[in-house]
Length: 356
Image 1 (tube, helix red, strand yellow):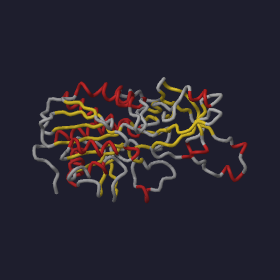
Image 2: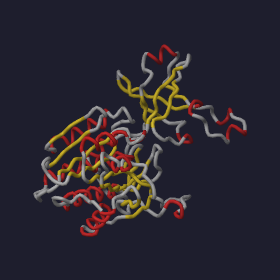
Image 3: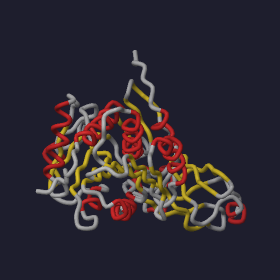
């Protein structure tokens, strides 16, 4: 029998928001709704980032960054029969694009469609072994002509998979965009909880829901310049390697439900890493380790290089099946991540800049 578990409303709202890179409108709205009233200062910028600040005169300045954008499809061409062709937003696996229901965001509201390609019955043996190129897949909205299609959608409209969040076993859920709505939720939830607690906060804490991470950590690059933090922590998802066909010798050993993944390596300030581990141990929060010898594929790579350099950390929520329409996460890992970030913020004292 499945145990009862209720997902937080804030997280659920973010997961249902459709927000490909450059089209983060719905995620921005969810973040505004749940975080704005808890912040001492709340700002938006030209990149579409959301910046929520607590204790604006505090020292040191701590920045928490979780990106709110997701993968998507961008409409680029409509043929004479009304079929829509697209380019991908972010890193898609071409083997899972076709045969999906999608929702296109248009000026007149959502339009539903299906990604199509030639059926297997109409392929020869050689074609069946090929992975279709992007231009060989289309979106079918049931239009009868190009004119009919363009009356409903426009070039430059974006689409997302129509796969919504669902709890499938206790606290384990599936969604099309846990990457990285869980990170945006975590940084926003930390603001909400720190605003309510009575312990004195020495640090200025700025939580940023960043834009356009999936196409090059672009929102983090501009917001870290604006915030000018002493310390910054990126919160993203990381690969849970506890499923079949994953070689731990190549990808390390991390598990769903094993707690936040704390990164070590060139992208990570060693003092920030040590403090994260110390906080986890003090609160008995389970955690896991990963090692990365180069700039990580997260906002942390942009945070570390902000202005004159920023003491940077990275926490990842374990996730299976990244960049597919049905990513899987244990929400208990997300909750542990929130607790760890709050503990880290409260542990900072004036003058703690993590220089080494």
